[in-house]
Image (cartoon, rainbow over all chains, first blue to last red; front, top):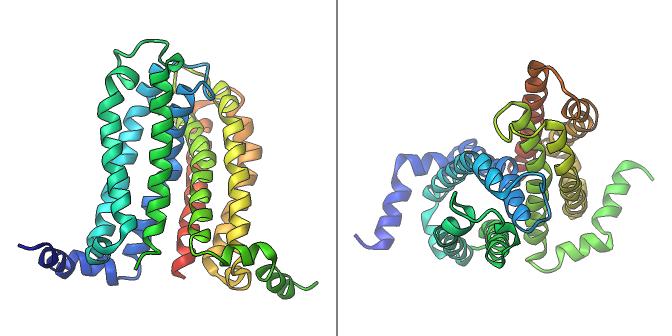
Length: 161
Length: 155
């Protein structure tokens, strides 16, 4: 199956039509997508700012990472599942949108970032003074840049096409 | 100056014109608005989760709230700069928009709650049931603010 016909098939599914044409599903999914930034974005920010030594200095990096991890995963599950449903509604438009592809590339880099830094910065084997290391600060800066980029590119999708 | 003329004046103000200029201005300011609420609502949500007993239980709520407070303020400042900037681009339409009106009522309630009851409970050793109620209500109020904001574009 070629990509154009795959996208066409997705748009012809009942689910896609329901999200695209119903009055409520699209804004509700978009609202939940956005709400996950409000409810869980603070945990991402505070983890990174703790690594930079700017926030929550009374707790160790390890404790903050461990405490926030399940919630950050929950937020990630919510944001990706609502994002997937929103994309399912209009795949042909997104396929043509440069901002969408920038966002997907940044999302892939978030995965690379997690794999690359997990053991030495965010894992239980990370050294206790990781917040004092260049590696810890680099991980935090890159994470902040990636998430800011995801927000900006996500917003710009609405202005493509 | 009556209310309608004020909103008309606002929508032709220099900053409204600047926002209406380049195509990227509005989405960029909107992105900063989202980053602003990741800081403000995001840090308030951490305190709410703590009040509910869901995270950071080794630290007292009072200590956690005090540590997060400057970041909440930073986020509120960013929100309260970028929000009115976006509002000014279509002041007349926005102030008549039911979602916008709903959002402003919820925002007023959420801020009032945050700086009175929420602050007091977060900074004292409140009984667990009261703490849970306050944390839950705070999450509901801020959720309504975000939901109302999202609906502005659809109503």
